[in-house]
Each structure stands twice: as C-alpha cells, then as structure tokens.
Image (cartoon, rainbow, N blue to C red; front, side, top):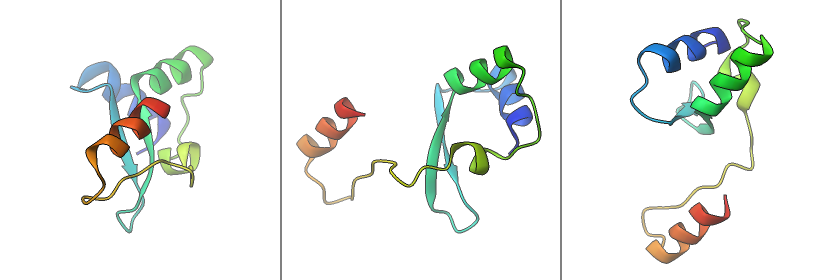
Length: 79
C-alpha cells in the first residue's frame, strides 16, 4: 500500500487507530497509524512510496505467545 492509499484508507474506511505493516514474507515491519496519515496529509507527502519503505523499522517491539502478560504490558507502556 502506498502513502497515498493509506491516507485515503484512514480518511474513509479505517475502523482502528493503527494497523500492522507486513512485508511479502508476512514479517511485521511497523505500524501505520491515523497520526501518520494525518502528518502525511498535512505535510503534503501524498506520494506512491510504499508503507514498507516509509515505515520499516527493525526495532519494532514484539512478544511471543508464551511471553508473560506482565512483560507484554510493560512493553506496551514503554513503547
């Protein structure tokens, strides 16, 4: 999905504040949010750059299914 498509999606159809961005191998790369879409719209960055290119971040926090819920909650608060 391009930045232009994401801005359009958030302005018309989004039911949530953020959505995951995956690569072609289904690896989580980042989260795109309404805040991102609003910033792109205000700054006029409505181009065809893909979300993968614009948001890719190897430091994206994650948890495993067996992670204790307390650790997951702490991770959510920190980020």
